[in-house]
Amino acid sequence: MFHHAKRIVVTGNTGAGKTTLSNILGTHLGLTVHHLDEIIWQPGWQRLSQAETVARLTPLLAGEQWIIDGVSSQCFDAADTIVFLDFSPYCCAMRATKRILSDRYQPPSGCGRIGALLLVLKLMWIFPRHTRPVILRYRDDETSDKQFIWIRDFTDQDNLLGLLDRINEKPGESEISLDDLVVHKN
Image 1 (spheres, rainbow, N blue to C red):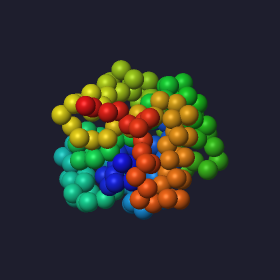
Image 2 (tube, rainbow, N blue to C red):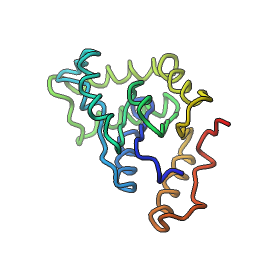
Image 3 (cartoon, one colour):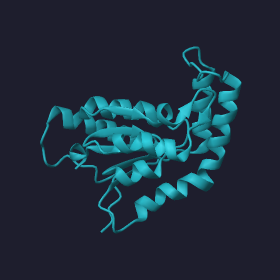
Image 4 (cartoon, rainbow, N blue to C red):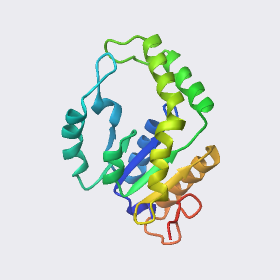
């Protein structure tokens, strides 16, 4: 059951809505949200070394309850639930471009809007070939007891949000489940 999930990773392509969904989940489930981008990226979109990333993530992942948005095998391994926002690259590109070009967007220190947009588009286009298959291996791992919630379109996302509303209205009610979204492995 989803309301028993305590270590959740929300993952997907750039622009899929990971941060927005993570913040909603955090509010509904009372869990602290950590944004992987804030942990592993330095000013000017310079990524931390692998050793520094592991050093920053290890104490966080040792915690009993959290939500992390981002893409990280280390986070996937520590999670009890993986929520995969698997939207088309075209949808993600439109959303990310709109966000970066909006007045509310603040580019990372040392990186302008155009630099941020170019990096995001590069990451976005390699995601389906390189990153998506890695995430789907967690779905296909029949030895794992992780919940894998596969959000393939906005209807799935709306169903998840509706479920969260029902959980808040009727806490502890046993018939509330994610059967339509959770990939069952047995």
